[in-house]
Length: 159
Image 1 (tube, rainbow, N blue to C red):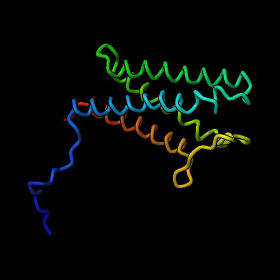
Image 2 (tube, rainbow, N blue to C red):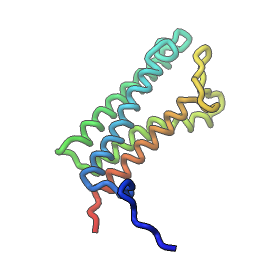
Image 3 (tube, one colour):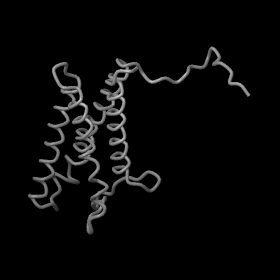
C-alpha cells in the first residue's frame, strides 16, 4: 500500500529553520521566565503569604527574598537570551534552569512531612483534583524545557 502525496490543503510537519527555531525557543524561554516572576508575585504578594498576619516575620522575610531572587534572575535571563552580546549556549541554559529550579521544589516540598499546598483559609484552586499551583509548575517547567530544546536544536548546524 503506497502513501499518497500531500494534498494542496495539507502541510507537512517540519522542524523550524534555524532563525525560526531560535525565535520560538527564545520566546518559550521568555514565557517561562515571565511566569516565574508574575505567578509567584500574584499568588504571594497579598494576605495569603507576604502580608499574612499569622506568619512570623522571618517567614515573610523569606517570601520576599524568594520573590526578589526569582524576579532578578528571570529579568537577567530575558535580557541575556535576547542580547546579541551574550553567549547563546549559557544564556539558554540559565533561562531554562531558573524556572526549573524555582518550580521543581513545589513537588519536592510535598515529600516533607507537615507541608501542605493549602494554607487555610486560603485554599488553592484545583483542576481535576490537582492543585493549579502544581499544574502551573509542571507547565512552566515543560515550557522552559521545550524552549531550551528548540533553541538548542536551532543552534546546531544541520548537515
